[in-house]
Image 1 (cartoon, rainbow, N blue to C red):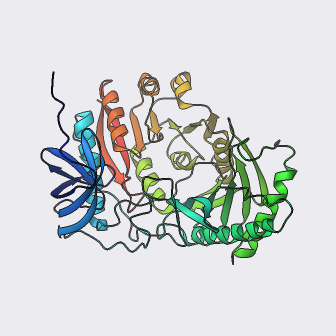
Image 2: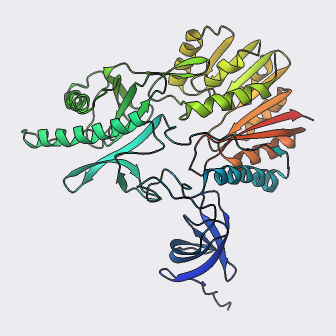
Image 3: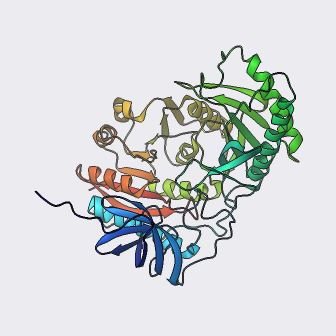
Length: 464
């Protein structure tokens, strides 16, 4: 009988160790007794004392207790909610070193997963890496008798009640505070009514435009059937409650939002309708103007998005046909339209495609055609365009399906421009393309999310 190997650590145990690296979540990595430990808020080169909090078969997580030797690159986080809030992971690392680490993340993923070492250029960062986010998603709840509105704590579903977030547009923070106060007023109002109904929303999405200064709020209710249900064409019982909340939100802010909509998740698209004002927001990413619906994807950092799109458009060359797969609201399709004879944008989100068509019309781009379909379902479309072709890929975090990459290869584009928000799935898809006689020419990372562990990369992939 084989004796079971005893785990070297136990929960609550204190350890002293040297931090040698950061993992993909921005946690410090150290080894003790040939066993890997992850220590959030610890940096490479530091000697630390930590307390074991989670024990797993092959690793443990430890909470930083004290620093024996701090890193010269350690920064003093200016945010009072850090590190408990789950929004940022590396505020304690100087911004210069954040950019260096993100470049190494991309380089190492390509080396380890794709077996290639192309030129990875320095990460394009921000002059002022604060107040860059145009979108916030908050959770609304109760702590005792007090309403809370904020973000989840790190690795939990506990809400941190916030009044300000230094990465958010200041108008977003104004709306968060208005929603909290309005929710409190609503509960007080209902407490004196005959029904005493609870708050009809548990989340809210907020977008604020850097161009117009206007805000758009999406109030989000529980999934249909959980707390209350209604028919989309006859929402009057719920709408009277929401109208009261809208009235209170507008009363509680110095700059009322330009629009408030309600969304109740469902099995398919859920139910949504406009409560007040305009159900869209306008934004500009030079030189184009965009109209954005509440549920449509749009880059949360418009300033860096301009740099991202300019770089990607430059790498796309001057194709006869450019395919923009996962095109969203047509952000990049407009940039491609300046160089390509024809642009074909594809996205599965019907709301995004509707916005994309409006955006093309708004910017008088007549050489773009948008198609509402899953990118994986259009292999024949990829064969239609004129040569030379460029295929632009901007998939979600999980990367591209194998079938889509095979269809792209069959179309024989001279260039594939791949924008990725995850170095690991980028490297995996690059490895697949390399098997079809394509190779990475260059990679340009762009820092879209300062103070977080995320990094965006543009990879130019060409036929060998």
